[in-house]
Length: 265
Image (cartoon, rainbow, N blue to C red; front, top):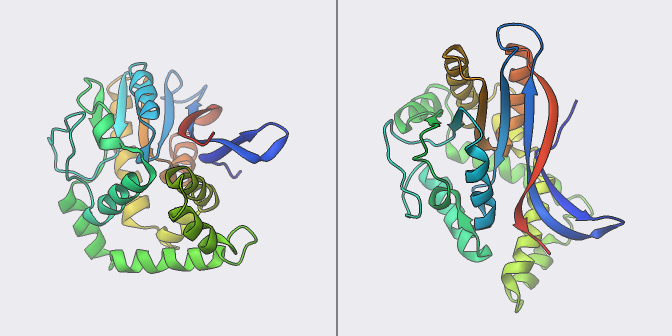
């Protein structure tokens, strides 16, 4: 079954009036097997969002025994809340910071409390990431051109046909931040399948192998006796990750919640 992990909440009875861009919290458990007393939640992230979104997540994280988090960074790195830091993949973090300034949003690295006692790093180091990319013959240019192809395909839709004009209008509008947020929110919603394009038929380091690393650490935490575990990862990772929770861990989706990431009112 296909599921969404990012959506635009719209006013009831008026699909043209957006209220917020939301990410999913998807909950899993099972009644049999070694993990029958455990609950695993996929907590979707957008890396730039309203500060209130990250404050709500910080409060939610206190409910978990362990929160596994996404970040390509050296082992043992200290991430201080409220400070700008150059971490993760330069080419990606640079583009995120550019959008952050244009849209008037906050960055995840600055707002999330990564020093919480229950936070556990569940991602590759830069060395691991580079090695896997090299071993698989992958490059950022390859992923970039795949994303360009996806964007061109979207231009053929009714919604995409006027996006260039809408973007130009938004850039020179007196309420630029708001109009840009509307355009980008619609892009997030429409391009949720983009990670599948980035992965290709054999998967990819940026999605598939990083998910495998996170789930190997999930298995360690479950064996250590933790019973309520959150996985805080970019929402684009969750299509692949959910399939693996079902197939490899025999967990079943039993509930979902939606959290407001961008206020679009």
